[in-house]
Amino acid sequence: MYEPSPYLLWARRYYGTVPYDMAASGMPTASREMLGMPASIENPRAWDELRAAIAAYNDVPLGESIAALGTSHALWLAYAALLSPGDELLLENPFYEPMALKARAQGVNVVHFDRLASDGYALDVARIAKAMTTKTRVVAITNLHNPTGVRASDDSLRELAAMCAKRKATLLVDEVYAPFDGLVDAGGVFRKSARKLAPNIVAVSSLTKCFGLGLERIGWVLGPPSVIERASQAVTLTAGMLPLSHANLAVHAFSRIGTLADRARKVLAGKRELVEAWVASRPDLAWSAPEEGLFALVTTSRRGDITPAIEAGIASHGVLVTAGAFFGVPNGFRISWSLPVEKLEEALTRLDAVLPSTSKGPAPKAKAKVKSATATQKAAKKQSAATPRSKRPQG
Ligand SMILES: Cc1ncc(COP(=O)(O)O)c(C=O)c1O
Image (tube, helix red, strand yellow):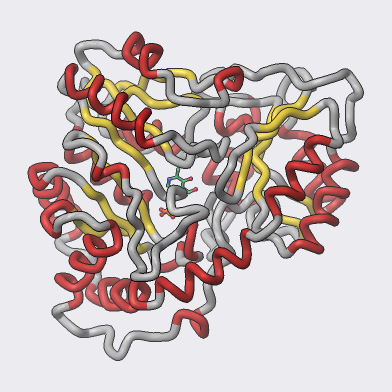
């Protein structure tokens, strides 16, 4: 059964509703004016063209790709293709909550391994190996890591994949944030998909986060042809086929990828440094110090869950960051920097007022605790039950 996601309910309730939004983890939505329209939304060749565009963008063979409705759907398809009820999914912690909930809904047991602040949230292959059992079929990570923004090196992904291969497991990489900051080359190609690093790596992604096309749901799964075939069967059984209008729009979006990448580069420029300087000015805070991307995890020296303080700041100061509780880090928050620079500076000043320095010295090195549902998450679920669906970004 599909449990509601407290995180997504909270995100839908608050994201995009405040003037100083440092919660949304992707590029601002690209307008229809910027994207333009395809010549036709009825071209029946668009399904094949989209598959070819996905393969070309990711620099992988055609037979290793399949379209999906965003990374959200791609994750679901990958699970459907790789896991059966009773299998085990070994998922990173801190973690993106829907990755756990989707697996549980498919009857899969979810177990976690820690990415530690003291290691810079790196992937510790020995630690991951220790957490595996004979039932572990998939090890799942995000790269860039959500919520810390930390990138795993190609070498560490190769090493992890090799360890998984020895245990007949697949490494699933959610790389929806991976194109930051390089984005695409002059030919519009993203060269760094994890899919190319080892045969047992399956990668999922979309044009949501790096290109601002979340509303268009342009996602995909990359994997060995046998996995793609099973994912294709899952599409056929659950939806028949993806909408033809979606395929036409998606092909058109890929033709505009260079323009969208230029826009993303402009949006990113100089802002991470601003947030870094702000964190450095606060002795009670520590951050994950990502070198790329649009967000970081900040931990505070406070004890307990700071979500109520964050929610109070929405009403009193119009400023929003994502409560760390949703990732298993109750005394922290994820901060993103997609706002224009002037607004970002004001947003940080307001955040000082919302979460004033406790002057208790440096934040402790956090070890994220996995909780199925904190009190905050339960409250979010209750409050959001009545919130209508909107066009707001999800998370
Ligand atoms: C790690 C991760 N995967 C997937 C998604 C959903 O992406 P999409 O809009 O492509 O479905 C998000 C959104 O926040 C995310 O953080």
